[in-house]
Length: 221
Ligand code: SAH
Ligand code: DHB
Ligand code: MG
Image (cartoon, rainbow, N blue to C red; front, side, top):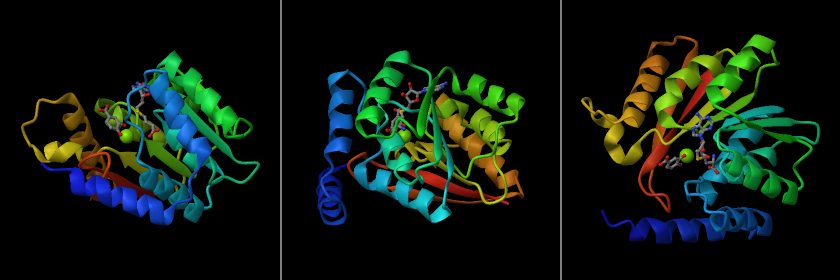
């Protein structure tokens, strides 16, 4: 598939809808310099996340999968000064890079990076009875999306918005007989959404600088 026109189009759209942002660009550069994979959301996707959180009026945000903190910065900018964003990351080195980027962005007072397997951290949150989140972004390992959904629903309340990244995977998620654990994870995630009468969902395919993928959006009732 020739992705060139998608990339040119994304560049045009970002140029016309965003102002150059040194903090976000520095976050990407420091991530690349530190050897992190370039699997962050695209700039226009990051801004969509921020706008969705803003539309929700989110005061408490949960993110699964921090990487270098690029999407974290977008989301945290949607928060009021006394807001909270907890972001969960398994890899120490990723968390270190992210904390530096979040500090540079002036967001350390609202963001906490929590290192560990997200399933363990979420179980601890449920056990501790922490307050529910207004907006949740799932973007850690895709094979665990079913576990993540089960747990984050226990950290939600009516009106909580759940966005899950990478639910298209270049169209592979439509393959019924896939033995790819990520694809199976995303398909099971969609089965759970379909069966849950307290969650209203949609999912959108995207093309652009990050290839062919997409995200789901759910509202808890
Ligand atoms: N949200 C980031 C990209 C996240 S990439 C952005 O758009 O900027 C996915 C991240 O999830 C990686 O940093 C990876 O280390 C982390 N991850 C993978 N498995 C995990 C797990 N079980 N628990 C927590 N984080 C995990
Ligand atoms: C992968 C993970 C992501 O979160 C993403 O946006 C793109 C790719 C991956 O693990 O390949
Ligand atoms: Mg992603």
